Image (tube, rainbow, N blue to C red; front, side, top):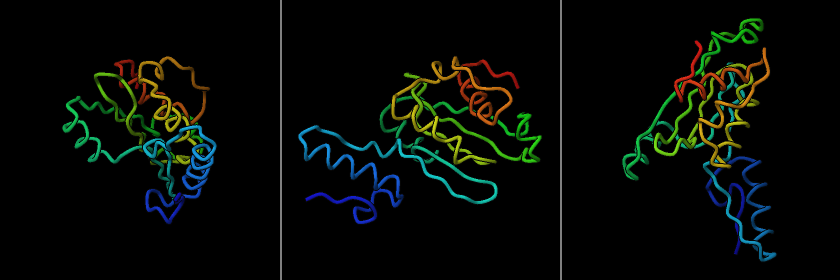
Length: 162
């Protein structure tokens, strides 16, 4: 018996249900697959927008303590971003939570203009197990809002410019 979407109570998001449906078909066809729900992004279309991927900060703290690894935290600000300022939207921030031992991104929380668009890069990083060091060396277009996330990635490895 397979159950996807709202009926399974895991994540009540349309894109999560779609991923679960694809996973079911993969398993039915004999190709083992499991959805990593920690890598499924979510967004609230408020003003400002809110987007997140992975556990809450409190859940990350609990997970790190339980599993015995140090939790790192780095932030980027919309106040230091020229595109956000040009849009009159300087309020907001991006927070990256990561495993200090491995450098892998565990969660990202964004509040600010176009947060729902910005979270996808972070969801891909969680899904792929990308490290903050790898992300800090990736080039982000200037001037764009993606530089807010770039600033948080760079801050995680001591390369912050703001």
